[in-house]
Image 1 (cartoon, rainbow, N blue to C red):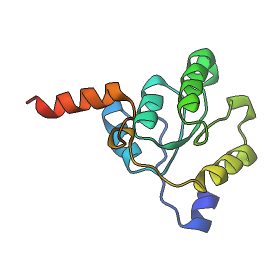
Image 2: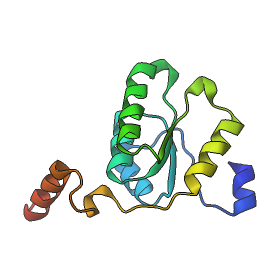
Image 3: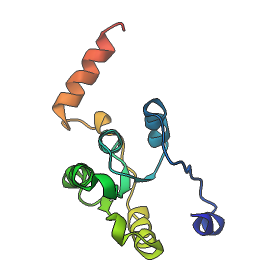
Length: 130
């Protein structure tokens, strides 16, 4: 990341873990996400319609691979799964390069006729004083 950043003058956030309440604002302003494939992360990535490289945690491989596969089925061209044992500088660079060429898309909730259930929940929340 440091080599890429120096060459491209890119901005990035690096952390071992983000608290759930901090995750959405960070993801919202991201053009590309590199993350483990936990349930919260994959749901946020999907709902915000982000390009992502998902790396399932090997100790929770079955669950996280299922989460990553779910996200990839919804957005096959902009979700790349790299298994932890296949992760190295080359595989990561190839994935970053591929996804960087794709245009950024607006969040799912701003796209008409997508995910009707999420749109319904969103509209109900906007009508309710919480």
